[in-house]
Amino acid sequence: TVDKTFENAVGLPSWITERKSFLNTLLSLCHNQNPRERISNDTINWENCEYRCRHDKNEEGHVKHLPENTPCGTGKICKNKYVVWTNLLHLPSCR
Image (cartoon, rainbow, N blue to C red):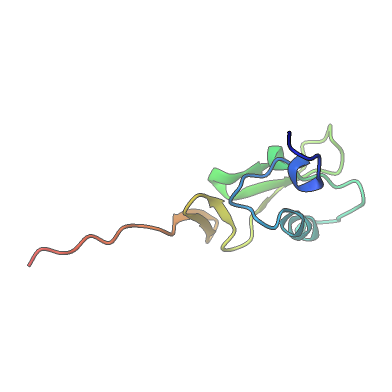
């Protein structure tokens, strides 16, 4: 069984290693942050490098972009609001 820690409970993917710090960063970037602000894996759109700041669980919230160089998949980061591969293979050129 997996221990019920904060890090496990938020359900973030394995490529986010410092889960608590990551969520704190996103919360600090939310406009008009308040104690009821909610961010979880369900409010993060990894494919679009976006997340939703929600003040109430029944609220739609407002969209923010993930910070630059945020991991958004295995071998991917958010760069200029887009997903960029970081581990592209460099094939040798023919001469």
